[in-house]
Image 1 (tube, rainbow, N blue to C red):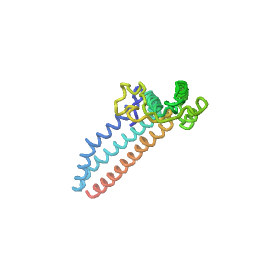
Image 2: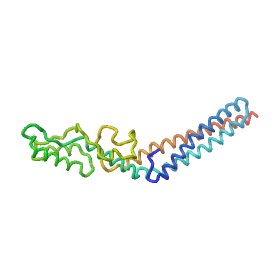
Image 3: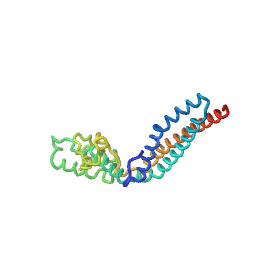
Image 4: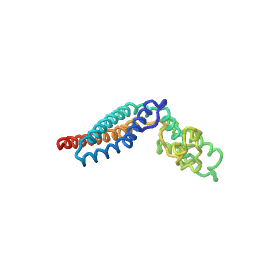
Length: 227
């Protein structure tokens, strides 16, 4: 399920539904399935009828879970938490590259050249957009050219957001090497991915459950005809 939204109402609803469906399968579905199998071996339909009713109820729960997922997609992708996570990832990603003096030990390593490259660095990615070719060109052209180069940052400095108490270490935006990312979060991509993952898998799982219900009903009818 997607990340919790601010307030977490819809996201919590989908998580609860998933929890209930999963535990219903373990606690109720497996014993009922065993009972249905034993009933079929005896030529009885009672166990299979209960399995059919359980699968119908499970399919209804899956449809409800699917509807909640559809309702929550927009809230999740536009949540404050996700925006803040992406913003921190962007700030950390800006540390991946640096505009620095080409020769810090030679003539071009004069304080003036270093200052020129540092000034150029502050103008890069200012609009929140990542364009490596554009940023490289701006850096190289600083001070008339030949002074600065756009290089891999060998000593990245983590922004303060990396140490936010809400981020457990494994989920921190800064728990890996810095990688350039746009500052504006692409909610369209988020919604499309959520639709594909949550809704797509939900549709598949609902279809599987309905298919199982159809098979159980057919077996029930055959057992009833035998009786």
